[in-house]
Image 1 (cartoon, rainbow, N blue to C red):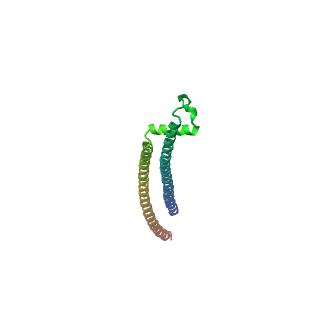
Image 2: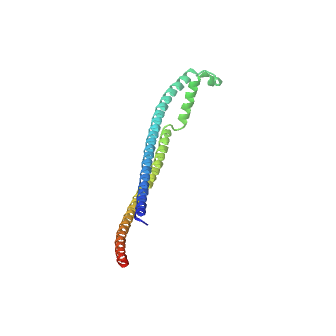
Image 3: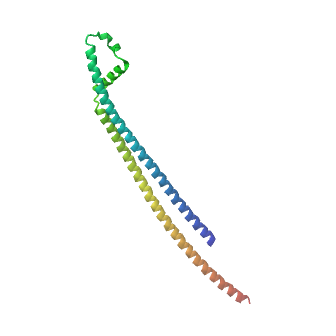
Length: 189
């Protein structure tokens, strides 16, 4: 293998190494961007759940107060009314509100937001576990990349030493060639 071919080979090896390192860096940048977007989405989702649960608490307490007023006024005005006329006595919104009040009274209203918060906490814990796994995977990839870079640097150093040795050997061969040419020249005279 000539010097130019060896130089070309070393240059190509170094170029490939640099491309691998650059592509790994770009991959890590993409991973970091995706991770940031996931975090933002999780925070947005968490805020949405909190807002919904707080607005649900507010609307539930309003409905309870409003419904209790309606129920007490219903009993006052319908004390002497016939039983079979009850469904037609109230407008649709009043019947709907009363139905909601009944459902809320039967199901423990305070456990509903707490239940959804517990589910949300469990969901966030699962996401956190996934993020930790992803982080461990990325750390492993970074470590592997560092090891690969170290190995490639060692390989480049070895190739450079080989190149130096080949250049030295080439120089010696040139000197020997000159000496042989002189001897041949003297013998042919």
